[in-house]
Length: 327
Image 1 (tube, rainbow, N blue to C red):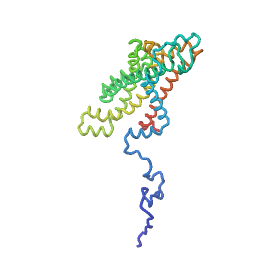
Image 2 (cartoon, rainbow, N blue to C red):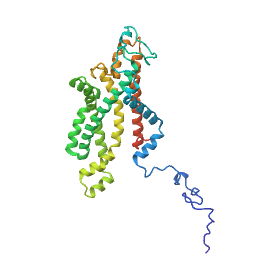
Image 3 (cartoon, rainbow, N blue to C red):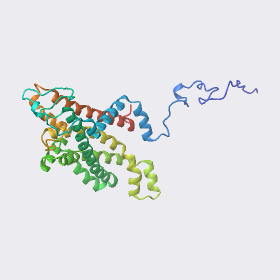
Image 4 (cartoon, rainbow, N blue to C red):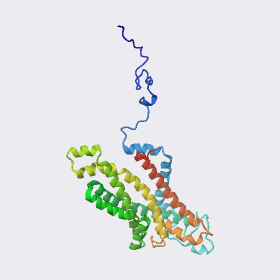
C-alpha cells in the first residue's frame, strides 16, 4: 500500500494550527485562537477595571466632574476672593434686585450682600465634608452588620436582617429628617441622619456578596486545609466581597450630597448663617425667584452637576467590576 503523501509546508506552523499562521481549514475563524487579540486572562480585577474605565467616556466625564468638585472644596480659601461670612455689601442690596456680575464680584451678590461666587465655592466644601463623613458612617455600620449576617448565618443572620428590614421600611429621607429633628439642627445631626439612612443599603449588599462567596471553590479549599472560619472570612471572603460595596459607596455619595441640600433646605442644617451651603442658598433665593432667578439656578446647578458626576463614575465602576453589568 502506498502511504499518504503530505504537501510540503510553506512555513512554520502558526497559532491557528496551519502553516504560516493561516486559519485551520474547515473551522470558523471565531474558533481559532488569536494570539494578538487583547486577552485579559491573568489580569487582576482592579487592573482590568482600570483598563475598561480609561475607554469609557462616561467614566472620564464623571471623574473630571468629581475631581473638579474635590479640588474646589479643598482649595476654597485659595479660589474664593472673599471670606464666606463677608456681607459688607449688604447696603447695595435692595428689596427689588441685587447687584449682578461686575469686576469686583464675578457672579454678583446674593440676597444678604455676600459674594455669590465665594458662597458657591465654600458650599462645595460643606457638601463634600458632610457627604463623605455621612457615607463613611453608613458604610462602617452597614458593613459591620452585613459582615455579621453573611459570615455567621443562622439566627444571627435572621436577627440582623430583621433589623435591617425595619430600617428599610422607612423611606431614607424621612428617616434622615426624623433623626435630624431629634438631634437638632447641626452638621453633626446631618451626618448622623444621612449615615443612618444608608446603613441598610450597605448591610444588605455586603451580606449578599458574602453569601455568594460561601460555596466558592477557594473558600472550600481554605476550609479543607483546616483554616479557622474567622480567618477564611476576614482573609478570603471579605476582600473578594468589597468591590460592589465600594461601587455603591460612590453612588451613595451622590445621594448624600442631594440629601444634605434637601435637609438644609428644610432648615435642619447648620444654624450658623455665616456657613455657606448650597441648600441654604436655595432657601434664601425663594423670595427673589421672579427678579433674580440666578440666585437659585446657580446652587441648583452645582448640586445637579456634582451628583451627576458621582453617578456617572459609580455606574462606570459597576460596569467595570461586575461582569453582569459589563457592556
